[in-house]
Image 1 (cartoon, rainbow, N blue to C red):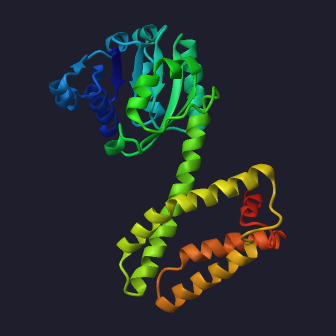
Image 2 (cartoon, one colour):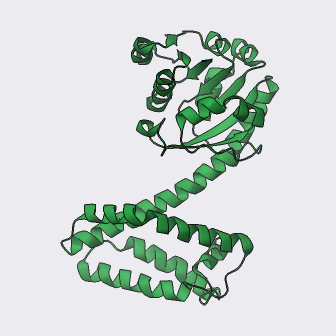
Image 3 (cartoon, one colour):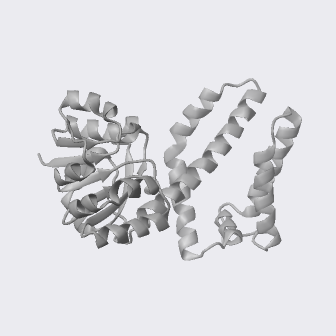
Length: 287
């Protein structure tokens, strides 16, 4: 198995290194504080205290630090820049689409091949079928490291050579996730307000998740094709449910910020004349 270098041994970097060791890779690790490498060294990794030497140890280096600013702090030194020449940087730090584009340009200027990745998984999920990591950038870097990539995540699509695509897709997913968090937590309060247990709701959501996925896929196709007529579920119909959510919150004496926010967004869409269109038409009020 080939060498792979891991730069950054926080919880995610440590999980990545550990999974690759388990898969039989020769793993070189670097971290500002060497104590975080001790457990990995015991598993068979080797620690190199100089980051430029760590990069030279492998054709591909995975950078997994707190953010892009931290990446520059580590990489933007003359000895490190020279070490990057002819090698591949697989960036798994957190950042914005613009930061991904900028770092891609910077890496190219150093003579490195650059692949940007966005992790949509917890450290404990790395290496499992349910883990997802989105990739974009240099196609040859993706193809040349596909064995490593597939070792880290069961779902690891290449989203194209536009460097920012992975970060943009990840942020879009997180927007959906965080909105779902808020909706779910309000739902938990609805359950509690009637003496029902929230864990039953969690099991329900897990059971019907495939159906929810189909609904979202359908709505995304309507947005892509700009087809909002002949609705299965109109904005006006959704507004009836939102009004009931507000009524329940008042009657049960629970926080009503979530249904109030939903009422505000759907009211705007109705005022804009989209009430009789498919719920996906709500996106037009966000443009």
